[in-house]
Length: 215
Image (cartoon, rainbow, N blue to C red):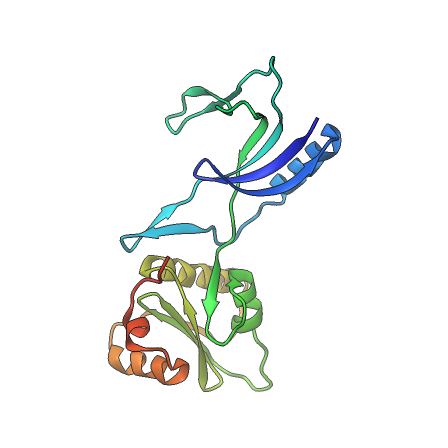
């Protein structure tokens, strides 16, 4: 009997995390993954410049057998419903909500960074001398200024950028860190900010002025 742990996105299979033939072992693995699913910045979709939650779930499945009963769950209205594989390939044993950490494109970094990595590698980057770090944002671009330079973090849209800004501010508020100044959304001298970003990144005007990233 084969068992699987999978992640779904909006009720469609996204990824197989594990397979096995021992129910006890894979059940233990399932609950360990579920209990360790602690996400600082959950991934969301951006459509029409607005953010929408993504329905991620973690499922423990077994190969379907004739006498298997459908999984009993609840719909968005809280009503009891039965959930089963229409193709009768798998039976749901357990199903829970699951969150996936968002990752961001950061200029001059080879890989996309999570919020925790942004905090570790950029926000809390040590300096020999006392230095004031400034964090602000313009459209979908968050800027972290320090040491006469700045980092540019691309977000999906303006709402996502504001959400990242608030997350970083909450972290600093709850973990007092000296010399970090949050100055909010950039409302004045926008053209000079755009030019500053363009001079640093060499990005074209389309990317600089764009308020959303491409899907």
